[in-house]
Length: 221
Image (cartoon, rainbow, N blue to C red):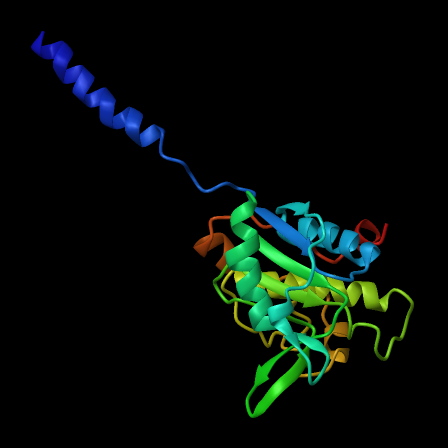
């Protein structure tokens, strides 16, 4: 009887350990349309996230832009307020770990002494939410497909910040700082650099795809 009791005591901790949930190899990310948006760009962004990060991606039904985020003097929306809205009011109603708001409306944030600085996107470093606008991606186009590629890069760039990645100065890296001009995005190859992939795999536990070059035919369907 004592031997049987000892065996049972050994099995209980082992069973408890086995039942502990482990971090999924493929996390789920929600793409959330907000207000007016470009459906083709949204679909391309979904494929872009799947291609670069290997995440499972769900496109959510469209929501209205929150009135609290509207900045009347410049007729655009404050990105920081949009992040709060996505994190507190939208994400909890989904089964996603991360969320990216997607809109055609112009968005902005405070940068240095400039109270209202127009931006392509904003992501919480090490957080759960990001927001991207396609409003500025149509400026100074060199090729018809440039705007779509810019959007895909910006979405993946902001997700990188959510993964905890700061800006990276390595030439062509997806985490390069746009430095206030959309043309900088054109110089990026669209992929994470080895150092950024290593960081995500080490700190997040997610297996990230490795590509030698970006196959845009997969995204531009």
